[in-house]
Length: 128
Image (cartoon, rainbow, N blue to C red; front, side, top):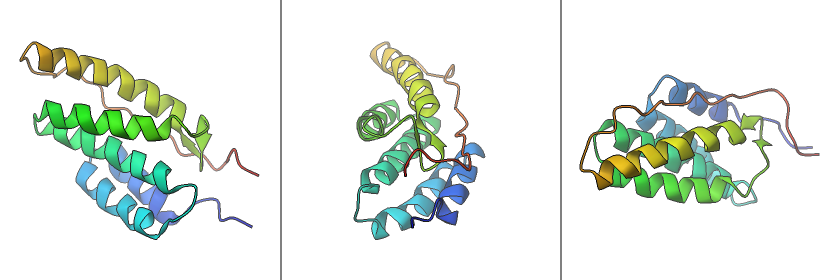
């Protein structure tokens, strides 16, 4: 029987939602280093999305762009809700922000109109 949630996943999501992106990265990396199964890329994708928001906050737009592309590429391979995480909403919001940041980067402008999403974590899971 699989454990539904590693408590560190909930902690990392709370940190993300509090815009503590570095801390989120560190917390989720603990799980990622231990995970050698099918969820390894799930955790890596979440880490990269969080790190992308950190780069955006720091004004390093190209870093945000690269990290979001890499993270989203991994996350889209999972169901809309995975491990209780609403990936569909996170992916949709981050894709929207990616377009804003890419445009700002091309125009050599700031990307202040990015809206940081909140990650929703439910008690349910899509897996058997």
